[in-house]
Length: 254
Image (cartoon, rainbow, N blue to C red):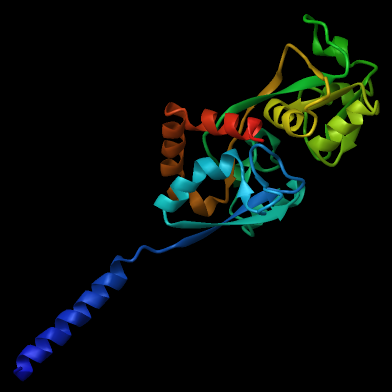
């Protein structure tokens, strides 16, 4: 083979290698907080595999793959996780805007879904009534660090006793043990717990839900370039019914 042909082949091979390297998509790392204690059915670790599972990882994994984002789940509690998000030590957490100390310092996605809080009791609640009629003079099991807009006025005036616990599971255990009159809890989390931990227990839920809140993802501001695409992806998942299907799957999964 002539020398010039060898040179051309080497050049073409080199250019092809360079093009291949340039075409390789860049992977971006994202640290997503996994709350501890955990919050099923939204996001939690499977006891057997230790894999992070739930509605949120299932719904979002396709988006992260499309965007070449590699997710690392970081366990932390609610209060410390919010502080770390402001500092940029983590990138995203499940957090409603109205629950944050400095909402102007974060970016919030559109809601994946909406949820309400309900009163849970050992005895049936009246079908009709106001929240004040039920909670005045009562003790309510709540989760530590959580803000309950509907109940705050009663806690502030000491008309209602707040009994904090470390998790929703502990809330229901305390209710069943008579430590409080009611547990005030997210409907989806309560449904998961009743199905998985208390299938033989009878608890009653108020006919009315309170304080509807959207389940949103809060991002550090450096993720602003991805937010529009993320919101579009969430809208598509809602329209296709994917989010509702995954919620049902995890609530009833044995």
